[in-house]
Image 1 (cartoon, protein in one colour):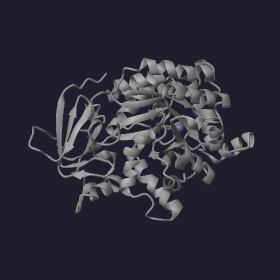
Image 2 (image 1 turned 60 degrees about the horizontal axis):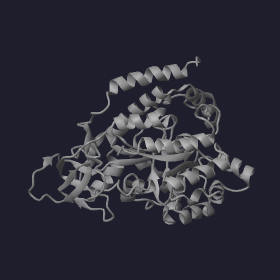
Image 3 (image 1 turned 90 degrees about the horizontal axis):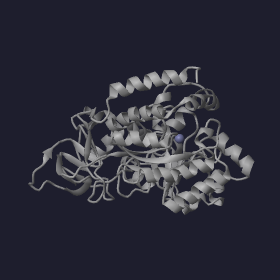
Image 4 (image 1 turned 135 degrees about the vertical axis):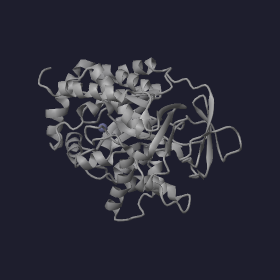
Length: 437
Ligand SMILES: [Zn+2]
């Protein structure tokens, strides 16, 4: 649990606020009191901690299955169907709560040292996932999964899994780092009644509803054959899009009507460019989404399909793929890409308390080393935005604060014993890979 009751003021050479006006202060001071940002301004002579460098909002990873660090590298090179049925699912069937706890703990260290301060999670043993994230000082929106697939019987029926989301939300009601949502996995892994139940629970309890949509062409074709309509239309017809906050991951195989539905219902997208590329799923129509005013966030997806949790790589690849798709170098500029992992990513989660440095928001901040060669030259202040997106990367992140608590200092994660987590995950991964159950 984080208790940061004191006030501190960080003095940086450059402060990138990511507010609507894209303010860049050179230099700037960020004041934090009790985990909340209370002031962002040019230096005014008060006492400060001189951190130098560049301070900006922590990144928000809008779609992840972090404990899959346990399966990183497994089944490499198999086509998606065999990868899932022969490698992922059998190992997940052997996973226990402590496996998930250690998988999340190692992932938390990777996310935090890479400048990610919030992650939106969907994985089994959510309670243990949330405990591990919170213990590591990582903010998480933990979406309790609802899945009707082999191996998931141990978590009860899909209806029981959906009801468990409510209990989970109660468990973490007092934890400032954890918000609980509900995640019916997808229209192909949950019956329509399950989607409806999840939607009604989300509406009743004000939860984020998070689901996978139209990730692959086969999925789209299969569901069209079964239900005679696209997944977005199916979700609309069964009331899922009436939930206040809906976050759809992937959304690769979407036509104009599908995108219009997203825009009409305010559905946000978690765009996973590397995962979609590595698994040969396709290139999502991000420019078409943005043109309609759809909120698009960028995400890593799980580390088994990607294979790291480096959101900076995703931030670079997203505009590159969008430009290739449109053959237009003006598709998604650097400021927009940066917003898609900060301000817009927070908005995609329905969290207007994150993603921007301004008074009243949570104090989730990162500092980058401007001495990194990738940050030179800066001729105009706005050059730092291009460098952040196109030439720097996670290696420049040196310090991280979540809820006003310093969790990474000089590139070292203060909250996780990384050597211990690495040993645990390695031993557990070997056990999961073995035939014995
Ligand atoms: Zn996913």
